Image (cartoon, rainbow, N blue to C red; front, side, top):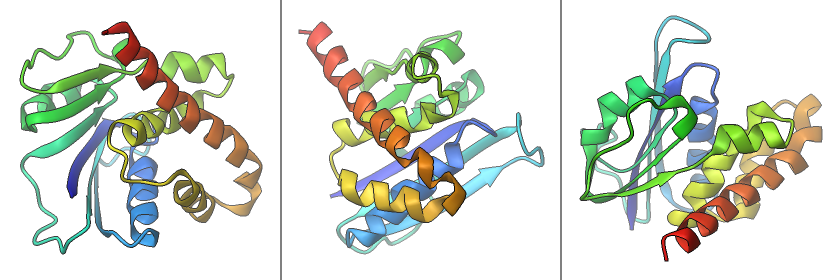
Length: 185
């Protein structure tokens, strides 16, 4: 199984760190992985995206034009990447940062209210972890224990106190997918 992912939004939304955590946790789980970040010159507020490939077989090229999954955090990224999702693929997006909803009918679309949920948790910086949890529920390639190890590896020791909050956000992201799927029944 191979999962080709684009994560895109503004700098400061945790786009690159989410991709790094995915790639690292896949790697330690024994998957073949790539992580290719792309960002503008601005530290925060500029556009940022990252391509991640997770595969149980060798990856022939890390450069992609089309993706099996897109995780979108702003309108510019939706405009740019919606058409790059392969038919039958998945698009997750944050509806509060999107003015024009996705229109594709040949992919599965999940509006994940990650920003609102992060605010309810009084932790706006965990919106990316909510989206990661949603991705993990929809595409179950990554094990939560390895993802938590990857987060711990990715952040400085002074931020380890936030690991339980990150795990809570990931689990809540999984629940959001369950709630969406139950609403659609």
